[in-house]
Length: 312
Image 1 (tube, rainbow, N blue to C red):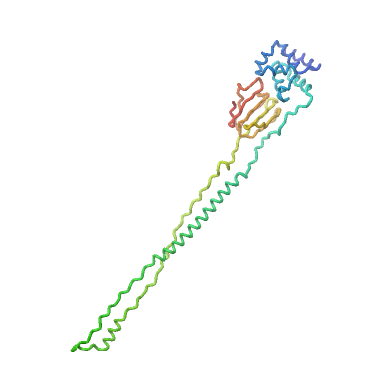
Image 2: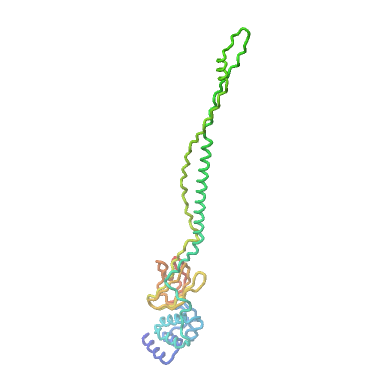
């Protein structure tokens, strides 16, 4: 029955039927009402009515309109290529899917200017440490020389020779010979004080153990933070892809064909909108992103991917 419907619709396309008419005739040929289509595709009623009435402004962009037309046609088991050909004939301006620069698989280059301040801090700390070690060594040598002078032995005092008093001559006492008197005077002379020279004993300079240089760990801002990108590959068919970064900026908006791949730089999370979820393969690092079934609406999907690859 689907083949006969497709054949009759093919003839209708040749006679200029619009995509909305093709979908409406296909739905009526299967005996379905609009509420049944809405329940099956999990879309709003106004979208189904807009597609059958050829009012595609509600989809905001041609890529969304093509995705919903393909989904509706596949649900009715009619030729999606014929419906899309009718839509392309109806659209006046050509479809330009890429509105922003294409994402590439090349990772962004590292900005080495952020390391300038930590490196200067480390070099300054090392220079200050060298100056402190030099000053400490110089002061140690100075105090070592001063202590060697203070530790010299004091001079030994010489014993003084006491001279006996000159004997007084008395009557009847014998006189002392002159020679004896001269010898006694010679002994009465004070002895010269002998000052021993100071002997400075060199004190070996203390051995200064090298102070270990502690490496200053760079701050958190100086560490290069590498995040896994989100890689989107078209492995089974073509599909439109729209990705928003965590700050709400749209970073990818394009129709991917079989064999094409796009990489969105991290870190996540990312908000992702897919036209044909089964045609794409998504990975974050080495982890495959599994699209939650609760976030699917027929072939389309809208969900959020965390930085570790978990989807919700």
